[in-house]
Image (cartoon, rainbow, N blue to C red):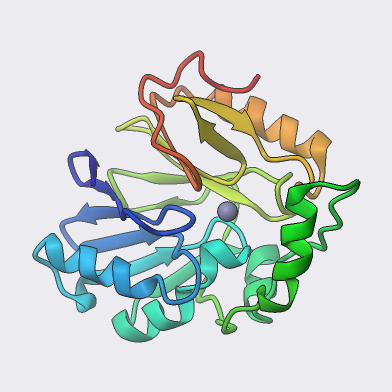
Length: 224
Ligand SMILES: [Zn+2]
């Protein structure tokens, strides 16, 4: 589904993968659960592109629903892969970058306990380590914004000219507004709130989060 010119979200995948089209090819942000690569590549084909046109794959954080499709998508495309140091270390082990112990009785805890044995993905050696201030030649300049909280090394990506923010799970879209990283699956609540404030100050008008629909006219819809 087209968001704005040259920016798309692949439908029907748990944890939204985003595609950005530039003259030199495609950049993918997050890759969904294992086996999501098929849907991503089908969407690439629907744009009239081939797997070899995928040049970069950026992972916001090392949760299974964001890097589960990475190994297969990288193998199919030969794309270079990008993540922060902390998340890259976890991806190299095929696991999350933080332990989660949801407290209290909740549906989320029950599901998490049931899911835990399946929460491994094929390990990938990340090619390029991203950190605050790095800028990729994507969509006129895609800036790396460190947004720890949901995980220790979570990053967001901000395209300043288009004012589009890709926020991973640092914020969640619900009812056309943004909420903070969900309690129970947040590594550090204090840092999560700081990262929400940081992102609210960027001047983004469109926010593309890992879950839920894209938030348009985003100013005033941040959780802080
Ligand atoms: Zn997620």
